[in-house]
Image (cartoon, rainbow, N blue to C red; front, side, top):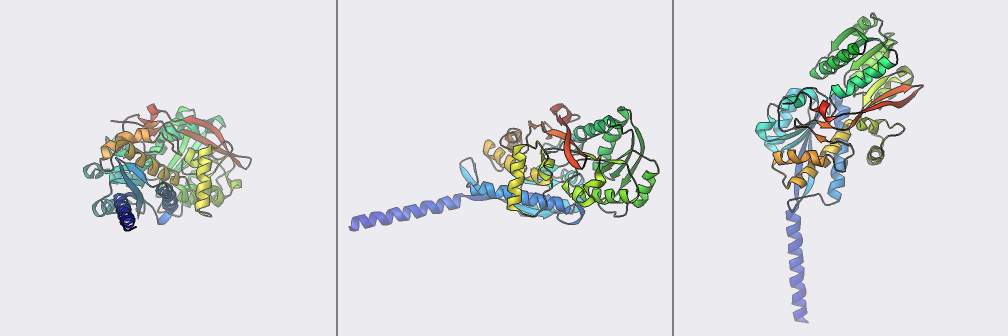
Length: 398
């Protein structure tokens, strides 16, 4: 009996020791998130944070990730960039220098470009959410971007507008690289399609609140369509003021038109509107024929975060968590950012909510369709869908 008791004690101690070692072996891998949690673009930060939290919860519930035989639970450090370059760089330095984080998700063109002055030197792999034409053309080897460029987003909207008989265009756009790059593609395509560009005005859309003087000037041109090139909340203010100013032109939008615009402005004031989006857009405003994966993501999100606003940026953050950690598993490392970068193109094709064909050499994702959506007879529907090919995604890359 004593012999058996001794054996039981030994086995119990051994089991406890093994469990202790397993617990110690299971480390926490921290990722970084820079986004706007205050000001006019804060809804993007809030949406992305919720989506990332959901992804982290799902992965950790399954025991985390297995990289090179070691198991890691996941965590994300969220910091407010205020959508300003200086604040973004300050947050980046905190993530890298204080927390030792080398995988960071950032929303925004101007903020992303500010980080690109440092990330290669610091060996930080950035996932930047930006439609910028130039961001992935600068030769930075540690930048990835899931968003379609304006050369894939804007031409389909312009072609649909011309098809509908809209021939005279005005543009009101944000005074930034984002706004200017979109505007260049829009105006060039509109002219090529036989339309006439009557006027272009730039505004500081994330700072200004009164757009009446500019809109009054544009009204004087008597356009039959007006392109609004801003992020979501400023776009809502401009849209409301345009209708208050008596502008009756059909409204065209870049990728930042979402459900919140419809809810805020009223669908009756948006009849004939055209806007562009991707699968991520359909997570915010599902339409007939939306992919099942997107609808499942939307249902999970609203079940986890009932009553919260589901934009479209969260989808990118959710996708980033999954494809980055999958690339780590494929590469067998959580520290070699270059190896993870190499395997990211394969990882993003596997079991993702947003469907891609991979990344270009410069880091731009390709393969996901761009949809032109229209509001006709008081309902949103898909007017057309155009795959975003690799040759457009990689155009001009070094």
